[in-house]
Length: 313
Image 1 (cartoon, rainbow, N blue to C red):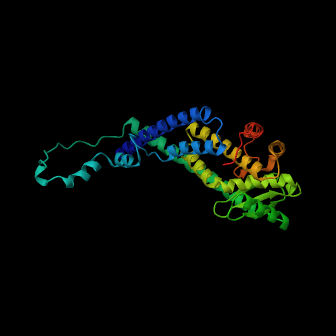
Image 2 (cartoon, helix red, strand yellow):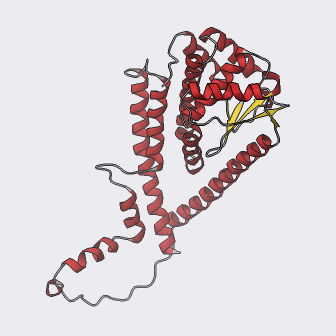
Image 3 (cartoon, rainbow, N blue to C red):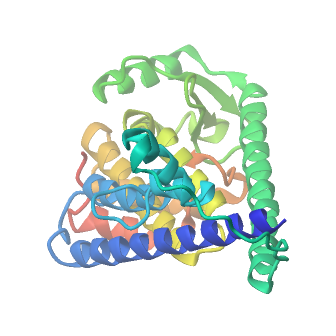
């Protein structure tokens, strides 16, 4: 138990350093987004915040006091590096060790108990969130599988939009009779789910399809996997949730820009369609990449569309 307690203390020290370095990088990114990158494309802003998020997940870099290798060394103990260096020394250079008195094993101190308790709470919280996210994705897949086959003309429209956006292959297209907004789900074999109410909407349908295909063009499902990993692993750190919201906002703005650049609606008409769909999103799946996801971001997205900041990239 003493060894476990010491390992837990070392792990939490390492986590503290990771959070400190990530926080400093987040502050730098925030300053850049407010100054130098204030007029940058949403795709650039999203990339900046993804780099910050990766800093929390992959704590490596030059001149850092903690990295993956040093973390292993801390867990194994300082003797690991000493033992690695011993074969390079001549045997005659090693003095005979002096006899050491046998000490009674030390008990687990208060800090070790707290570190182990915190580790146990973290494990329960992270496992609960992972199970919840996996369940949400399974539910999305089941809902998509329960949809109807899309009409031939809609499949042709999606295929044409996929070619315009540079996708190598159009996704599977299904119709959700009870849905109100389109959404995509899946990593290797994505599916585009369209609400039946949108099939006869003409230009609105084309614009909505372009937005959803932009998620596939940008590989947002894979990037969202990184967001989910950070959110589950560092659920106790509010800054990670804040960074994820920044990524969500930039991602949706980037897809809006693709939809305006490659779809049938100009920015003002697209903004009006966006407002209508966000207001009607009562049955939209919360875990999907959906056009009307994140209602709190609506004002920011509309402003970006109307002032010309939404540019594809």
